[in-house]
Length: 428
Length: 174
Image (cartoon, rainbow over all chains, first blue to last red):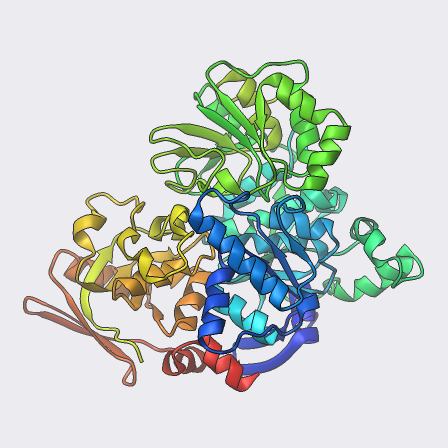
């Protein structure tokens, strides 16, 4: 019987099986941010185990609340900063170089096909877009990862989702993943890896694949994974060109992590997107999804374009196309948080930031901020936000606030209309 | 080993996420005990009032997929800060479940029909839970009603509960 991508990666990394269904795997990278890492650092100190398994494999960013908004967030940054210095962790991204972790770390080339990655952040599943096994974990798993470079997982059963058909114009990866979550439910992939495959995924660039994998966790998935291909190699080439003679050689090496044609899947789903329309969430669960057209006209108070889901350069380009020459509604406030300094700079160079500002957007520094209601755009009780983020949970962006998850195109169109609206990029 | 017994709190809804268990605005706390007053503050559940319904409770009984969403271990910490070390449900989100055992706490899965019977029999009564980890039983008692429910832990989960968590276990074994 053949193997899935995750099974192949586990076979490469297994260091122990303490139970029949439990695999302890060696980690290629441990990512850290300032919310979930400081409690691990403090605990390690209290246990007299203030060590790291390999400073070169630990990558650190301050991203959730940056710059610090108060004494408590300043302390979180300080603990992380001092710890990174103490242990000689070179890849540390502080104010000026920091950005949303799941956009920043791929941009730095820190994820490769076949890698195992953990982070104390549920959206770590994003990095599976590179053909890696990347999973969000809690602080204790992170702590052990930092200390020993290992983590325990159950056997990675895999759901294969073949995205088939032709993606219509004006319909994006965000709409695809919302429709997938709507189909399988918030508990549909719990304890499972989702392998995203099919011609639509094959045609997606890395940023779209990251959007897809980013929300695997909203279906309960441990990791979303795309098979590594030429698009993966081309994205990573600046970081791997010294290791391989040519992109073809790199591709051949990575093909080791392709799923076998007779791989055993827990479930295989064909998800045809030829008739898919732009999607939006309603209610308080990410599987409460419907076509934007059915929610059109719903007033919003705020539009937010940001987060690890949709604030990369391709997202900004799409939103700017919709916004060009237009003004946002007088009844709406709109916020753009480019995901990383590189995205911000590129958007400046391409004139996109001017487009956003001319339209009436506030442009913030890169940070997670408003997505989880910590800073930079928290909602008041009763307010409504159309957001390119990943969670519409009750209270997520502020107590008593309502979040509607949408693509950047829909977010931009909604900012202009003042109510939830389809973008002109989509024609029914 | 931690205590897994005491008064029961029934939360009759699936998919209770970790933002509801502990909102993100409290994730700036470094001390785990500081989370105690905010447990379940944003829970969307008719008739539930965190101000009056949590005090004195030691065990949560709920439906499917408890702990979905954010990976924040602040969720089990906020439970522990309120003396709650055991959640019983149909199934759990992966990260939350692992976080519970990693802290030496327990997330015990029971069949949906068993959970349904527990809700119909006990949810409206003042119910006390007595857990015997070695025997693998949880006894639910209230006003003349008593049910002994067997449960099983995997060897690995049991090791974590016995060791008090994953840090000590991993440091000793890997």
